[in-house]
Length: 113
Image (cartoon, rainbow, N blue to C red):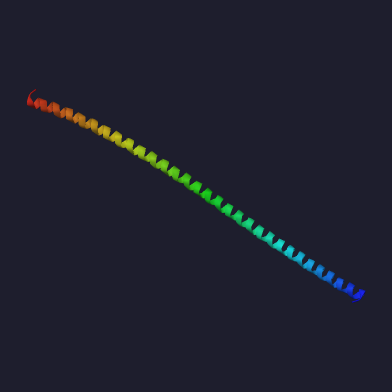
Protein backbone atom coordinates (compact mmCIF):
# COMPACT_ATOMS: atom_id res chain seq x y z
CA UNK A 1 0.00 0.00 0.00
CA UNK A 2 1.27 3.38 -0.89
CA UNK A 3 1.26 6.56 1.15
CA UNK A 4 -1.98 7.63 -0.47
CA UNK A 5 -3.59 4.32 0.44
CA UNK A 6 -2.36 4.63 4.00
CA UNK A 7 -3.66 8.18 4.29
CA UNK A 8 -6.98 7.18 2.74
CA UNK A 9 -7.27 4.27 5.20
CA UNK A 10 -6.46 6.55 8.11
CA UNK A 11 -8.99 9.11 6.84
CA UNK A 12 -11.64 6.43 6.65
CA UNK A 13 -10.78 5.31 10.19
CA UNK A 14 -10.92 8.92 11.36
CA UNK A 15 -14.25 9.48 9.65
CA UNK A 16 -15.61 6.25 11.15
CA UNK A 17 -14.37 7.28 14.61
CA UNK A 18 -15.92 10.73 14.23
CA UNK A 19 -19.19 9.20 13.08
CA UNK A 20 -19.17 6.80 16.03
CA UNK A 21 -18.37 9.71 18.35
CA UNK A 22 -21.35 11.68 16.98
CA UNK A 23 -23.60 8.66 17.39
CA UNK A 24 -22.44 8.18 20.97
CA UNK A 25 -22.93 11.88 21.73
CA UNK A 26 -26.43 11.70 20.21
CA UNK A 27 -27.18 8.59 22.28
CA UNK A 28 -25.94 10.32 25.45
CA UNK A 29 -28.04 13.41 24.65
CA UNK A 30 -31.13 11.25 24.04
CA UNK A 31 -30.57 9.34 27.27
CA UNK A 32 -30.13 12.60 29.22
CA UNK A 33 -33.36 13.98 27.78
CA UNK A 34 -35.18 10.77 28.65
CA UNK A 35 -33.74 10.86 32.16
CA UNK A 36 -34.85 14.49 32.57
CA UNK A 37 -38.38 13.60 31.40
CA UNK A 38 -38.53 10.68 33.82
CA UNK A 39 -37.20 12.84 36.64
CA UNK A 40 -39.76 15.55 35.89
CA UNK A 41 -42.52 12.94 35.77
CA UNK A 42 -41.38 11.50 39.07
CA UNK A 43 -41.31 14.97 40.66
CA UNK A 44 -44.84 15.60 39.39
CA UNK A 45 -45.98 12.29 40.87
CA UNK A 46 -44.35 13.11 44.20
CA UNK A 47 -45.96 16.55 44.26
CA UNK A 48 -49.35 15.04 43.44
CA UNK A 49 -48.93 12.45 46.22
CA UNK A 50 -47.93 15.16 48.71
CA UNK A 51 -50.91 17.30 47.71
CA UNK A 52 -53.27 14.33 48.08
CA UNK A 53 -51.79 13.52 51.49
CA UNK A 54 -52.13 17.11 52.63
CA UNK A 55 -55.75 17.16 51.48
CA UNK A 56 -56.45 13.92 53.33
CA UNK A 57 -54.83 15.31 56.49
CA UNK A 58 -56.97 18.46 56.20
CA UNK A 59 -60.13 16.37 55.79
CA UNK A 60 -59.23 14.18 58.76
CA UNK A 61 -58.53 17.21 60.95
CA UNK A 62 -61.88 18.69 59.99
CA UNK A 63 -63.59 15.37 60.79
CA UNK A 64 -61.84 15.33 64.18
CA UNK A 65 -63.00 18.88 64.92
CA UNK A 66 -66.57 18.01 63.96
CA UNK A 67 -66.59 14.81 66.02
CA UNK A 68 -65.02 16.58 69.00
CA UNK A 69 -67.73 19.26 68.85
CA UNK A 70 -70.46 16.62 68.64
CA UNK A 71 -68.92 14.74 71.58
CA UNK A 72 -68.73 17.90 73.67
CA UNK A 73 -72.39 18.69 72.86
CA UNK A 74 -73.41 15.14 73.74
CA UNK A 75 -71.53 15.32 77.04
CA UNK A 76 -73.11 18.67 77.87
CA UNK A 77 -76.57 17.27 77.04
CA UNK A 78 -75.87 14.24 79.25
CA UNK A 79 -74.70 16.44 82.13
CA UNK A 80 -77.80 18.57 81.74
CA UNK A 81 -80.03 15.48 81.75
CA UNK A 82 -78.28 14.12 84.85
CA UNK A 83 -78.79 17.43 86.66
CA UNK A 84 -82.45 17.47 85.68
CA UNK A 85 -82.89 13.90 86.94
CA UNK A 86 -81.11 14.73 90.20
CA UNK A 87 -83.29 17.79 90.68
CA UNK A 88 -86.45 15.80 89.94
CA UNK A 89 -85.47 12.93 92.22
CA UNK A 90 -84.42 15.37 94.95
CA UNK A 91 -87.86 16.97 94.82
CA UNK A 92 -89.54 13.55 94.79
CA UNK A 93 -87.44 12.38 97.78
CA UNK A 94 -88.43 15.50 99.73
CA UNK A 95 -92.11 14.91 98.89
CA UNK A 96 -91.86 11.25 99.94
CA UNK A 97 -90.09 12.20 103.20
CA UNK A 98 -92.83 14.73 103.92
CA UNK A 99 -95.44 12.08 103.19
CA UNK A 100 -93.68 9.63 105.54
CA UNK A 101 -93.59 12.22 108.32
CA UNK A 102 -97.26 13.02 107.77
CA UNK A 103 -98.24 9.32 107.72
CA UNK A 104 -96.22 8.62 110.90
CA UNK A 105 -97.87 11.51 112.64
CA UNK A 106 -101.28 10.29 111.51
CA UNK A 107 -100.44 6.73 112.60
CA UNK A 108 -99.26 7.90 116.01
CA UNK A 109 -102.46 9.92 116.47
CA UNK A 110 -104.50 6.94 115.42
CA UNK A 111 -102.70 4.76 117.98
CA UNK A 112 -103.30 7.38 120.54
CA UNK A 113 -99.83 8.49 121.42
